[in-house]
Amino acid sequence: MASTSTFKQLVRFQDGEGRIHYGEVESVDNLVGQTATIYDGEQPWSLVATTKKATIASVLAPLASVPLIYGVGLNYKKHIAEASFPTPEFPVIFTKPNDALAGPYEDVPVDPEVVELDYEGELSVVIGKDVKNFKKGDDPLPYILGYTVGNDVSSRYWQANPRSGGQHGMGKSFDKFAPLGPAIVSPSAPAIAGKLKDGIPVLELQTRVNGEVRQQTSTGDLLFLVSDILQFLSRGRTVRRGTVIMTGTPSGVAAFLDPPNWLKNGDVVEVEIEALGTIKNKMVIG
Image (cartoon, rainbow, N blue to C red; front, side, top):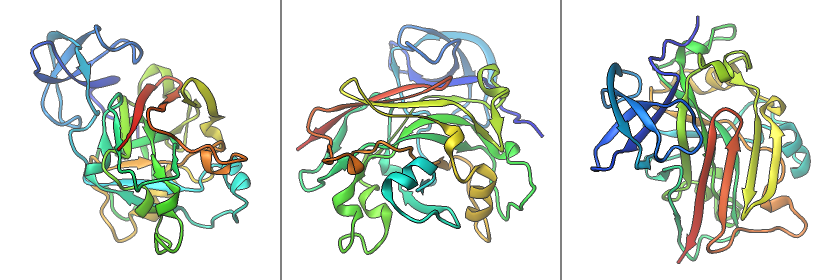
C-alpha cells in the first residue's frame, strides 16, 4: 500500500507578514523567495489543497511539535566499524523530547558545560499514522508521512558513562539538539518513489562543518530499515503520528576522528540529503 500524503514536497514557513503556512514547493533548494501553493490545515497529515499562493520569507521546522523523537544508534555498518563496537542484534534506541526540535536554519544554543559536541547527519522518517504492534512482513509505507533531513547533535561527554548511566539520550536531548527540515518529502514524490527499500529511500548523504566534508555515504549502508525499527518500537507500544525517527548516522563523526574534532562556538553544520534538501545550523556556545 502506498503513502496517501496529500503533498509531494511540503514546507512549513512564514510569509512576509509573519503568517505561518504549510505549502507545496517545486524545489527543496533555495526555498526563501519561492512561491508555495498553500494548504489549509495546521497538521501535515490533515491538509486540504487550495489554489492560494504565498512567498516564503523564512523556513520553519517541518512540524510545530512532536510527541517524541526516536534516535537509532549504531545503524550504519561503516559507523559500527569505525566505533569498533559489536554489530547490534536489535536497534539501539534513545529519545529526544519536543524541546530538542529545531528548525532547519536555526542557531543551536549550547550550554558551556555541554562539551565534546558532535554532529550526526541523519535521514529522518516522519510518522503519519499511529502504529502499534507492527509485525514482520507488514508494509511500512502507510505509516510514513514522509522524509526529512536531521542532525542528531550530541554531547559525547554527557553521553559517556558514568555521567549518562549508559543512556545515550542524556547526551542528545538538550534543547534544540534535533534540527530538522527543510521539507517533508512524501514517499510518492517522483524524486524518491523509485528509490525505496523497505520504507527507506536509498539516497546520498553528506555532512559538512564550515564547508569541510565530514560524512559522505549512501543510506543503503543502513543496518536496520523501517520495518525492523517499527517492529521493535511498536511492540506493545503506540508510536504516535507526528513522531520522528532519526534513523542513524554514518561514519565520520567527530568522536572517531584522530584526534577527535569537536564542534566549536560558531561552527556551521550542514547536512544535505539527495532529493530532501539541506539544513544549516550554527553552534552557539555560551
